[in-house]
Image (cartoon, rainbow, N blue to C red; front, side, top):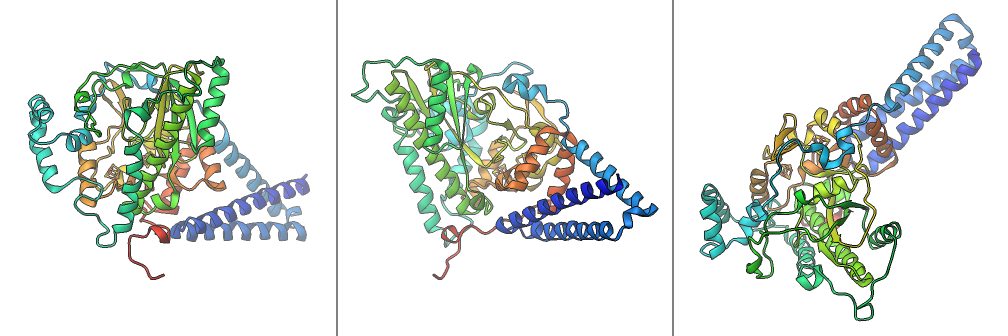
Length: 482
Ligand code: SF4
Ligand code: SF4
């Protein structure tokens, strides 16, 4: 019996040492200095213990009273630890209901024209929409005027990385131009190709769902989900104007489509690690452009099947995409206000296609985000503009959530001239999608003890306030010699 126990413990320690080694390799690859040091200590400790146990086993030490005690103690502690961290603790029923689970009162639909982005970049001082808006919201006029005076975000008038920001800003605007180009009405609401016009291809909703998801993935979507559109997440009024379509400004919006196909585009781990520098806004815009490209093609595909479809992307939104993504089962909303996916955490940008093509909706998921965010708070602690709440979720417009202060966040973007992304970078769910992190996310998703354990471990291994990592050479915000 003792002999068998010896083999089991040695096998367990071998697995532990191997996990330690993969974590160490992953940390070196991620260029995480602190995690590399602690990962090295952890691996050395595990390896030392393994060698010691092999030696004790070979020398017959486990046949002695003290040896057997140590062996049995290790075995029981390991079994207890594994069971405590792996067993599935009760699911969060609220998360499993998606956004419906978060509604606790009357929800007023979101007016896009009131959004800090829309009013600051769309409203031209002196224009009729400008006058109409500030007559309705006089409390916002002075603050917005001061913002316009200072210049807006995204490189106007400067960035944290001046004077070497030129290449990154140029690349950022290249991606933005693609979003703009794909946001004209003929592209977001495509007609069927002449070869496909006048016919409707009959598909079962199951087949249609498999086909649209497969197509979206084949053209680059990292994650795809389907939901029936909850009308509460459709904007009440149009507010963003990009193509001189001023007649649309302030226009009431209603949903014409029953379904939304929501896509998440991964943002590169290395680029996001450099937040808040220009390499990070370049990556954000690149992901938005990928989303625009995917949404445009997907809408076109559905139009060619004979159904109405509209592409929703950075320069053409009619719905709040985070709630749609939650309902489509792509993840849960985190403290920082973004969607947290299991695979990439908040390191994604969203796009969508709304349609009347009959589809099968996906189910919302519980990956433990709500509980983890309650413990973690790292984004709130690290946010340079203190825009993320440190306290618990509150009722905001009839929904229970953490409410990001988008006004102060926007002002910080204006100050650094990028879209900051510090909260995204420091989030423990944003780590690279490597084997050790996948294992940790699996544990965290199913077990409340693991959430507490790994929230603390993240602080130890990555620091309470993780520093920016260097961007890849081609995207560095400093001049370099070739
Ligand atoms: S983007 Fe920056 S300023 Fe805005 S909430 Fe995140 S960390 Fe704060
Ligand atoms: S940093 Fe922590 S608190 Fe913030 S979103 Fe990520 S897990 Fe939640």
